[in-house]
Image (cartoon, rainbow, N blue to C red; front, side, top):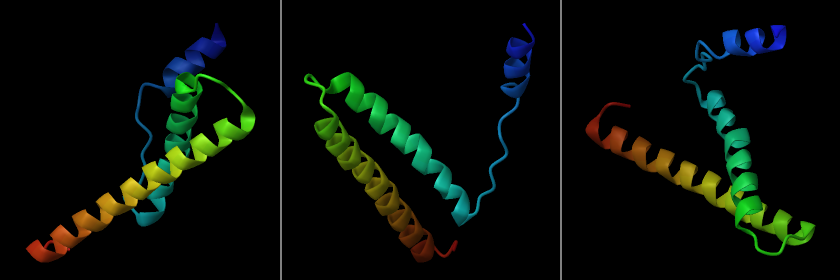
Length: 83
């Protein structure tokens, strides 16, 4: 019962993550988790080489999209004069 109380107490408040460029590294484990779970569910024939290739491809696509979005938003902020 005490483990349940500890887990519930840890989940009551959000984790304070700073808004620095280094804090964007938190996107890597989240993206990896999304890629692994999505491909584990979607693959019809599961073999380790195909699974690893598909997860790597999806992970690089997610990270690439995040980088492209960040560049676009930074460009818009520079044009408007915020950054």
